[in-house]
Image 1 (cartoon, rainbow, N blue to C red):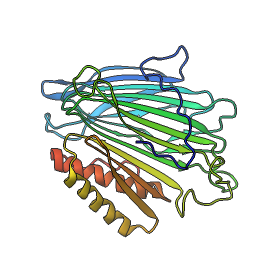
Image 2: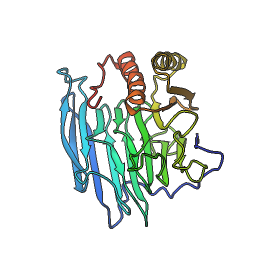
Image 3: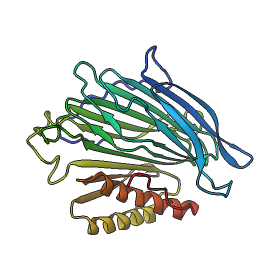
Length: 310
């Protein structure tokens, strides 16, 4: 599945696996969640450079249902030209985890070389990963490539959110970033009989305002919209009723917010891709978060995720 912001098809960057760390990285992270005594724990963690983690916490007293919530932070406060970040997040069989960030990913001027971030997600049988980083903000002259690769077992569940917003500029003009390119690949687990490493779906979002004729004088990215949100859901529980429930949740949010438009695409696997256009990060986050909360309640009986920012 390939979605772009224009008719021209951008060439995809090389997709080196996130675990194949080059000699020089600005920050790297490698964590593993596992089940111990019917509870999800962080069994392994390694981080260096500009990426750190906060000790996991639990929002439920029910050990069997409790998810480990892990927060990733970048003490540097933002990404600049030439930065390279790599993350590897593994959920072993049955583990349940929420991975988020402390704050938005801010990409500043990259005059000579772009920022890259590669993330590898591995979700084994019956594991549930809710991957909900805060928004990506592209400031003037920013160039950023984000590659995410999710290896999923047949019975794994994944929620993966992404929100892209234009950064503030002194003159008040929007869309002065050069390029924001996010690629999300879903592949079968190479060690299982379920598709054996085959590419199952790709979400390719390529935002390059100058290339598509959007100058800083424009006040919108498309129609009346400035922000883009995405939610990718893959789970054995996805069916026609799931898609209908998602559309009902999104329709309710659209009825409350004039500048919000959403779309739902069923994937050829047991998955759904949601795209949201808006003018406000909080509104898009609210719509996407409501879908996540609804499905987590329907499928697992869990309560809503905490709204930390808004």
